[in-house]
Image (cartoon, rainbow, N blue to C red; front, side):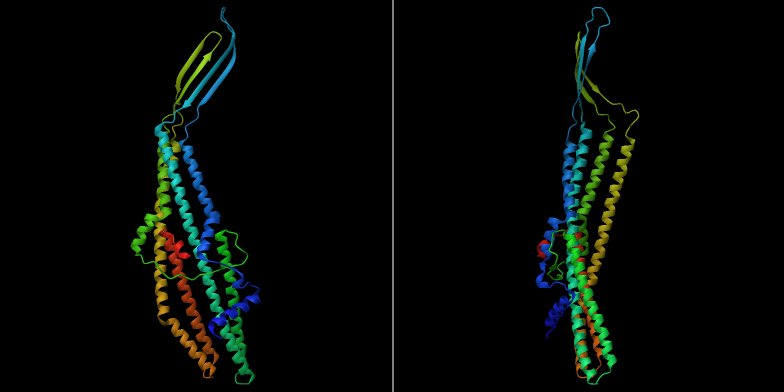
Length: 417
């Protein structure tokens, strides 16, 4: 039986024992499909998009003019001197607060900056969501690959056990060798079982991120991609500072805080109210025109202006902190990529082939009785370790690429399908 046949048989048998669904029975999910579902159904992204509508309404609020006010009163008028008629007196006054341009313009600019910031926040939420879905998807692929490695190890130990059991029956080997290989086989079976359960954990994490009504059992299909990024570190730095929506949002927040500060300072000038009215009594009818101006005697808006100054300073510090964090993430993930590249080159350069050859030699020597099964187990452990490290290096490379794509705001949806 060939290696692929052994893997398929072992996967089917272990799935039957554990009561888990077969791959053919589960709905498969590609990376592109997972990303599309996440963008349509993720509550996290929908919340960020709803914030855009709230900010758009904030612009309408900032552009609205103050409503006029009307005051009406009536009452009886009784003359106190001879000849002065008595009757009813009416008073109607209409007032219109004046929205000064020095106060109106910065208020509108602050609302517009808030709208831009909400748009950049939605872009950032979309980038983070796509990166998280990719990481979860590739983690599921990694767990599946680990599961196949453990299955292959289990199948090889089963073959060794069958040979040792036959040798023990005919008296060629001592019984303790069978006990030892049984212990190794039990450990390998437990590792395969744990690896299968880790697949379910990875799929559950992916389901949570997507937020879509997926079937109870589903599977992922795809591979850990090959590297396509060939951009220098300096170019990546400039792209992060130019394109990342978190920095754009921080700049918009700074502009919003600056305009709010300007608006608070402009409010130190009292806002006048123009009014006109009619005052009627049984004897006279008078028209009234005037202006009402509040006097800034007790409240000179020192508190609100001080708060706006603090918010402006905080926004500036937040922008700088965002820049530092993004460049720090860039450096970390770029170094992760370099390390993964180096490891992959070493494994592909001959380490895996050497370990495979060593295992073949040990198996042949064991088959002809020239070596014990301990040498086969040692060679198998070395090969399993190298394959696992090679898989981890490929995952690290893919994970670092996902993070770098997020940092430079690169949408790779078309490459994932």
